[in-house]
Length: 319
Image 1 (spheres, helix red, strand yellow):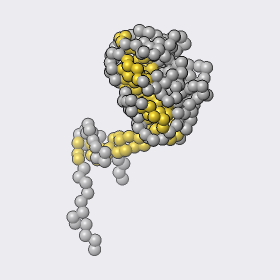
Image 2: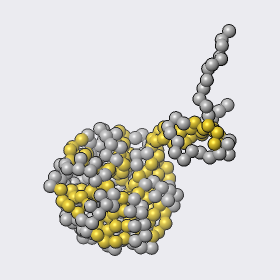
Image 3: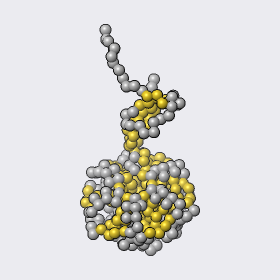
Image 4: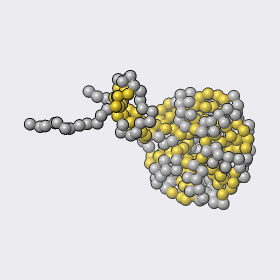
């Protein structure tokens, strides 16, 4: 006869509310909701509809996260300085727009500490800081440009590429830009970027054809790495140097989504719902948001939310 004496399982913690900082694999019973829950790695890798922007536009700047995003500037049609904040559900207009309305503008940082730089009408090096309420002018780029890309924070940013086609790379210290003697290996505009000031990724773009080329930045120089599967420009790109995402872009407008693992790009089977280019994007490879853009000749305000892989609280079904 089998003896089960001494066999023990894991003790389940009983709590009245979910832990604020659980660890992966942790399981607990929520006595308030009467649910058994766990913190597990979940892979979704899909886009879902989000709240539409108030102003349809293209070629706008972006910063922040999926639940605290910022969209600013763009062409609506005509240059605009309009600024909107996203809370994960809906967009709210900020009464204070950019000091210099422009499109093909670049950005980085967070919703309450963002940096806007470069742009068109005409190409400019103008740079502005956002504190969650208003925009303030600060030191301009050394090389005026539009359709550039950037990475980092409001006080430690990186600007690279741009139109006219350039490989120019500059670093921002919170007040002034410094030109780096080493530019991109492939000069281009309409490219996307991800990462920080000292660990960035540049991908896609145009000059004189659509590019899939990807380069990695170590704080001093750019190194060519594996290319994207789909050449494109004016895409939404965000994440880190070792965990990035690219979605949409042209030409023609695409829904294609690819994930970067630090070595290579993988095409994701779940594409965006609306094909478009000239769009904004913010967040991480786990949780991101893409908004506005050109589906074709028209201008859109459509927003889509990305859920990738990540550790999340999940309800455990028992029977």
